[in-house]
Image 1 (tube, rainbow, N blue to C red):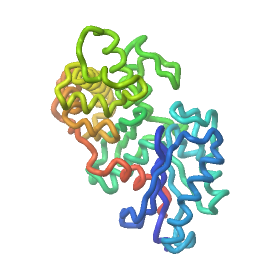
Image 2 (image 1 turned 45 degrees about the horizontal axis):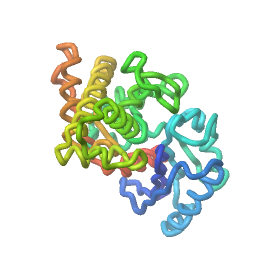
Image 3 (image 1 turned 180 degrees about the vertical axis):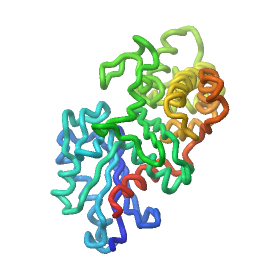
Length: 317
């Protein structure tokens, strides 16, 4: 019986990967940039060059059940990444097959947020839950929907792209998809930055610590730092982001009536700044039969860990 699996989480900015044992312990992990290679083959070669020494330290490939990969627009059925808006590689990428050809290990792919949801279900705060949604708030907005203890995949493997649902009619343009008003355009780290730029332009006379940053330096993290110092515009940005996210979550609750919605990813580091306005807007936009029933919570797993654990779980027999 194989002792280990490889878990790989391909995010819009960084790729995190690690060696996982059958008890869900990450033995060793590392990361690299996701978008430094125009050619996906060069990206995979660099990743494997970092992964191989880790595999050898765990006793070699004979000790491994395979590789599990979570990626944006990852299709569980076909093993392909298809038209991912936050990655450089365009079109349909047969990434599972490419990993198998280059490593000799069986490779299974799923959507990155689905991998995070599996990680939460097996090792995190969703243990024992059969109905929940994981929302990943990172470079983009991903979602993993679990109904009756199973990840919702749909007929083609792409069910649950809640980040691309339209939450503001004729709203902000999403640069990756060309769609207007999607949740991802507002509630991602990228969206927080866009909101900051809009508000700073909209209120040119208002003083703000955010004006000390150049356009290139301004990030969701700098908005958080300024908000913690009491900056008015920075706090308005989180209020607005939470309002949009909460309205969207209310729609999702009325769709699947989950026991919990678990927020995961870099933006959750903002803590109450994002949680309080999100919870308020969600409850205000729910029918009475759904109000005060759904737990809204942050993931208990480290940001890197849930997706690595969930991805690795794809290959266990």
